Structures are given as C-alpha cells and as structure tokens.
Length: 332
Ligand SMILES: CC(C)(COP(=O)(O)OP(=O)(O)OC[C@H]1O[C@@H](n2cnc3c(N)ncnc32)[C@H](O)[C@@H]1OP(=O)(O)O)[C@@H](O)C(=O)NCCC(=O)NCCS
Image (cartoon, rainbow, N blue to C red; front, side):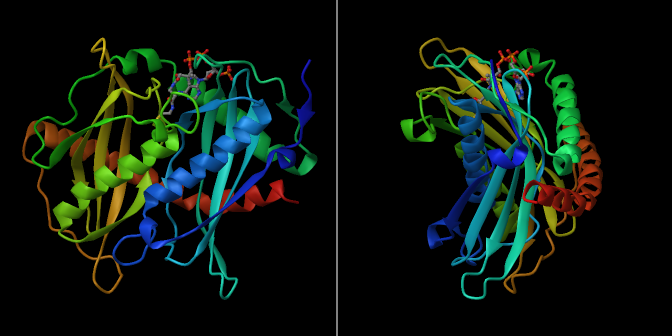
C-alpha cells in the first residue's frame, strides 16, 4: 500500500554557481549547463519520491527568458505534480540571483516526465501518489491533463525509435558528430543521463549556429522532446545537426540522435530536438543574422515546418508569466 503527499512535500532545491567554465566568451551562461542543472534537480525530485532510479522520458519546451552572467547563483526548484503508475509529471523553474545585490530574476521554467525504473531499466510502479492541497489543485489538474496528452504523444514511440534515417542529408549547413557514451555521462548506473544529453546537444547545435552567424550565439529555446530509447554507457551516439530556419536575429537548428550498440550494430533513434539560438553582437544585444534562402525541396520543407514551430513558440512564451504565478502556489 502506498501513501500520498502534497506537491509542496516533494520540492527539491539546488544551487549552482556560474563559473567561467560554464559561460561563453561574453561571460554569459551556456543554456546547456542550465538544462543539465534543471534535469539534475528534477531527477532528484523524482528519485526522492519514487525511492529508486528514474529516467527522463520527455520534456516540454524550455525558453530562456533572461541571460545569466558569470558570478551569479542559479537556484533551481523542482517538484512532483502528478504520479501515474510508473511516470511522474515534474515542474521545474530556475532563477538567477546576483549575490551582491540579492536581485533575482526568473530564467526559465518547464515540465518534464520521469519514469521510475528498476535495475534493468524497466518501468517500476511508484507507490507514493500526490494528494494536492486546496491551493495546489489547479497545478495538479493541469499536470493530469499533461500526463493524458503525453500518453497520446508517445503512443508511437516504439515506431519512431526505429526511424534511423539520416537527418536533413541534403542540407548545406549540417554536421554529424559521433561519440562514445562514457561512465560520467550517466548520473548513476549504466544509462546516459538526460541532462548530459541536453548539454551535448546545446554545444553541437550551438557550433553550427555560431559558424553560420560568424559570431556568438545564446540558446533561446529548446522545443519539447521525447526520449524513445535508452542510451547505454559504451554505446556510440551519432548526433546530426542541421540549420532549418533563419529569422532576423535568431535561427533554428534541428538535431537527431541515433544510438548504436557497438557489439550488435543495432541502431535506434533516441530523440529529435529543435533548438533556437539568438545571434549576439559585440554590444551584447541581439544582432542580425546573414540571410538564408532554402533551395532544395527538403530545405524548403524543413523551413516551412520550422515556421510553424516558430508560431507555436510565440504562443507558448505568452503563457509563461501565468505559469510562473501558478508555480508560486506550491510554496504558499
Ligand atoms: C522511459 C522508458 C523507461 C519507458 O519504457 P516503456 O517500456 O515504454 O514503458 P511503459 O510502456 O511500461 O510505460 C511506463 C510509463 O511510462 C510512461 N512513458 C513511457 N515512455 C515515456 C516517455 N518517453 N516519456 C514520458 N513518459 C513515458 C508511460 O506513459 C507509462 O506511464 P504510467 O506508468 O504513468 O501509466 C523507455 O522508453 C526509455 O528507457 N526511454 C529512454 C529514456 C532515457 O534514456 N532518457 C535519457 C536520454 S539521454
């Protein structure tokens, strides 16, 4: 028999100091580190509630609202909003704080789904459920809806996982990087940690964006992702990144991750991602990106799909303030 707890009882907080090794040459934090810290804190909330290991199954879009500078502190908070059988809907938000003035600002907030797993990486039941306090009811109901929508969006996960076709093979702005997954890419056990994957993706997608702009770029956003297949330590991962769309000062880079078992040669599509970057000029402000004209049929198709995602992002950004207000009910 399990028990139940309020959302407030599941809160985990972490603090990270922004050091030069986390930042670009203008002293601004790379988005990849922020995402790694967010997934780490969310994983702690999931592990603590489920009393065992938990893996990142999916994440919702992440928007970076304010840049963070070297010397700042980053406070990440995370909590469990809903528990299904093995899956957990997790809320996460990050604030940056200037330690000299105490001034703090919201950097980003999102939701993630973790799945409790056993030693073989198979889902295991979570016995502690969420019983929201009165003021947490709206947050809880939204989490239930998200969980239901997520079930629909992952229904074809096994089929998608078999799609190991090349990403954007005809793109003029594309690169493919291969790596062996090392023991320190896992948080514990033998599977690659989702936070490490986001750190790597941000770096690789950022290199193509930076090369295209011939300048510094900052991560603007990462669209929602689903992790179809686990990646083991010792696997070879191929990450293919390609330029999809160019706006006035921002651009979208797509990425596809394929994991290969080196012994059997079995290849699986682990996930696909879309990241946006903003070109930053020497004055630290957004600066124009060289124009780009899609030429081949596939470039045009990817351009149009990216325009749709761009419209959706605008709508999602408008909802962030309301979400930030709602999150406060967890602490009341
Ligand atoms: C997550 C994972 C363990 C699920 O395995 P599975 O065999 O598909 O699981 P099941 O069909 O038994 O579903 C178990 C639960 O997880 C949920 N789920 C499954 N895949 C999910 C995903 N990708 N995202 C979110 N939830 C997921 C199901 O809806 C179900 O929810 P419920 O228990 O609340 O009803 C498996 O897909 C996996 O290992 N994915 C890779 C995760 C990973 O490695 N992340 C880091 C990447 S670097």
